[in-house]
View 1 (cartoon, rainbow, N blue to C red):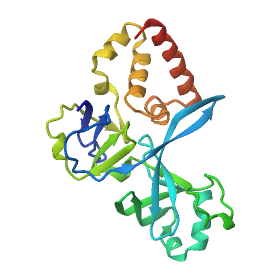
View 2: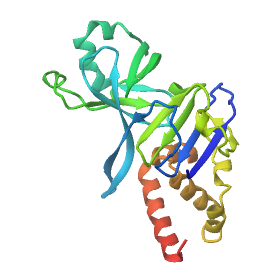
View 3: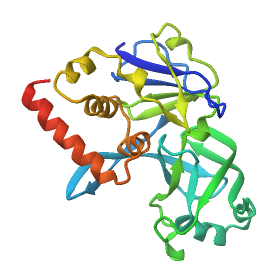
View 4: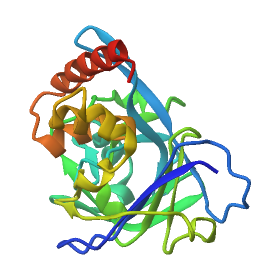
Length: 258
């Protein structure tokens, strides 16, 4: 089984996550996890189509008879519903509206795959998201309603299998990963600090070709950080800048055979 992993101590906010970044899709050992599927969503940014721009997770909310998606974004601190998109469902379902106490939805149940996240407090992002006509809320097409952030995994272990497009959440480290080599790291404001993720042979090869910050950026992208997470780590204001930088580094490393 070819795996890379990183683990972390509890940070000042009491968040304790272990993230395993699976580099291969096969695993011969019996799995003890309940896997949650996700899919990649593409987007055209600066005139260039990015096939894997965002991770979307199918979700059910409370007992609403509708299918939704939310973006998995570990670069965001708080799980949110988009105000414009969720509003028609507040108007339609009184029991759901009763869960909203400005500025939060209280004690919400989210279902992703067969996994339930209970008693989740979810923010309301006022004025954001696509507006949905009332006559469209009952269509079978899943509506994209918000963001699943790092807070929902507080004091949990998060396992992300990127090649198989799935992730899992556990209260303890699954037995099949007990002997997996890992490195500890800290989080700052819910974001993983990059330093310990960069102790890899290929990173040191890249340092011979790139400046330190460029090598750091490229490594984080290669191990699965999303462009939006990169924005938060480096304080970049415009996501387009991440894609432009990524393309330039790719061309440079490809030319050098790295």
